[in-house]
Amino acid sequence: MSPLAHPPVAKYTDEIIRLRVNACPKLASLGRINKALRELVNSETSVSTQIAEIIRQDPSLTARLLRMVNSVYYGLSSVSNIEEAIFFLGLRQIRELAMATPVIEEMGSFKTNDGDGALPWKDLWAHSIGSAILTREILRSLPITIDDDTDYLVGLLHNVGKVVMAHAFPAELREINREEYASAADVCRREIELIGWDHARIGALYLERHKMSEELVLAVQHHNEPANAPRHQIFAAAVQVADCLVRHAGIHGGFEKIPPVERDSWLQLEGWQILYGADGPETKIARAAIDNALTRLPQMLSGLV
Image 1: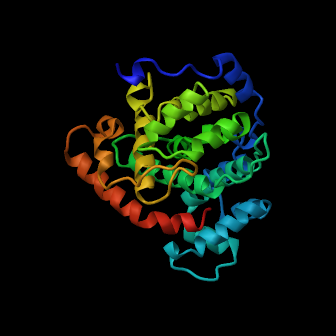
Image 2: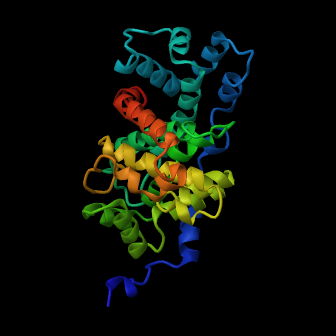
Image 3: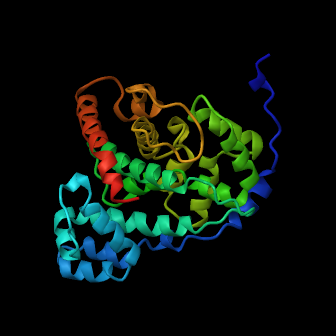
């Protein structure tokens, strides 16, 4: 009989898991991700001096802005003027910075309950931001219109459950990180064995507690199995593909030990099938956009993380 026929009994009940997740610190940024800046960059009447004034109030955002504009990707050097940086980057990049910076700063302040500070947080942020960038690129290749930042946020926050696990289940997370796995799916199975839920379900509960949108919650919960999402499958599918692409680029999920992702393996994902189905014009356009984004990704991240 297959060993999966009798899976191990979960260590924690659903009630205990919910209590531990609910006891985690709240992230203020999830409710108001640089609200003033986001409103300003979305306004047709905004000018760079107004945007620059708000950016100057956030030292972390200022530092990331200048690192990004001076990165290899933009081919510039020694830009120290915020208005000039805004001109080179454009409002979309500024908005993405405004979303990523406060989330990363707050999550970076999370401490594990047992004082373990050895987790590779920078790798997790790089993977999260890379996934956000590519999720947006993937969804832009489709004949749909997304009039908010959901396409970026679902990628940015898809692994928030790992951050929560570091606080709520530090011993189990440390045990998970000690082992090697054949795939990301095996990591999720191990999480369920030790805790009862995987990081996707834990992250979805955490975001639901923050009253985030249904699209975001379901995308995070089902990003490893988008066909199971009851609604908004397209967001979960895009995150699954983006996650795979970022791993292929050598930017791992941050904690677990799994082999590199082979090129074009994302074509076999259920997320790819949901997004593009059989090969056709949309698939060719998507592959070209993905190749372009993958080429630029390391340089883009060098200014963000």
